[in-house]
Image (cartoon, rainbow, N blue to C red; front, side, top):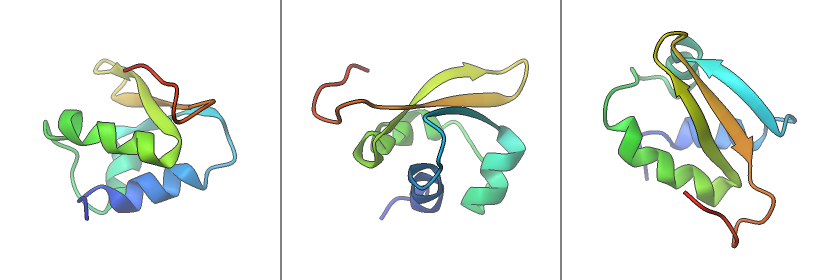
Length: 75
């Protein structure tokens, strides 16, 4: 079980194909602070049909994008 499972499940249930979340929103949903390890863990999101798009340090937000075919993706 990943420390970000709660976040991944929330994202997979989202009705939007592409959306942004702020770092604060992510921390509230995940129930823990976002840290540098997020870069490693973000690969797990592929199993939920989404990927992390643009990471904006200036806006402190992440873009999430729905994967058309989970078996045919690129990182």
